[in-house]
View 1: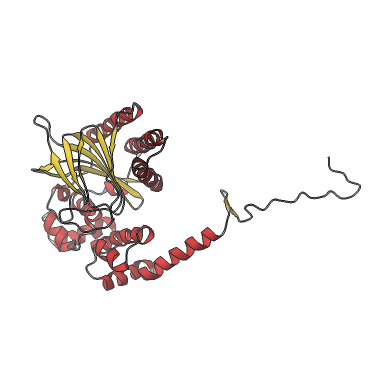
View 2: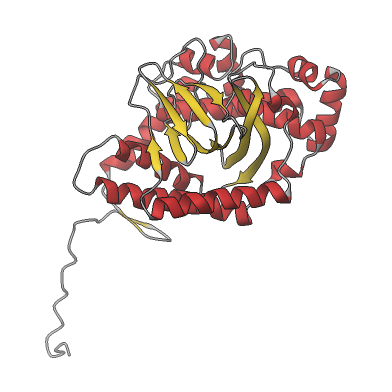
Length: 342
């Protein structure tokens, strides 16, 4: 994934063709076979302090998965570097800063398959070498994923398990990888997404916003310049096709990202504002309240209160109700005299 603000091929991203989908199915099928026979090497960076601004690096609020198909990727992290070779897979946990260098082979170009996660959406794209050493998006597709939490739990648990030691580690890791890769394979086969129905500059603008929302320079004017059109034309086209103004779409995607940080990261409100693309924390608070009805501070307090209330009440969850009598045995009723129980 490219760093925010870089003038790379993302700005001309296009949706996948039927041939691209076939290639992607084949890539996941091959990875599943390798995992089944314990031949799929998994690389995961060691734990570092998350959400750091490092020169030449970037990070995401959710994990990222790389499946190397051709050539290699040289990854750099705050505390280590490693090389991801063809036929290997890498999971970068949420918030881990990283840089990427594309390394083609003498007779084969660089190519990898990258999965990213958004709110109720996941993206899959093929990356190529856009400029010497610089990977970027070749083709991309966004898939509706109502079960996104399952993908995230599997990806996070796989990364955590990789860095642990235990007698069943390898067996657990194999099962997790098979489940995760199988879900990706299924969504490529059957999945669809609302974003993919957009065409031309609207699709490109949405791709750009979702990939680069943390870039504080991202604006209608900036996107229009990158897409080679006027801001007025792009705004009109976007509103005409989506019934939503591009400025509000940018704000909404940024707020969605900030909500994830409020729910999962131990960051200050100011840090979340900057990481979500807002140059001014006070402006972030105003926009957040416009979208959610409360300030970021109050939203976080409400989340903490809800968690505490739920945690303090033992319960059993049924499909249609919650039972808060967990652990309290039911007393057997004594039958009335003269009417013995059968």
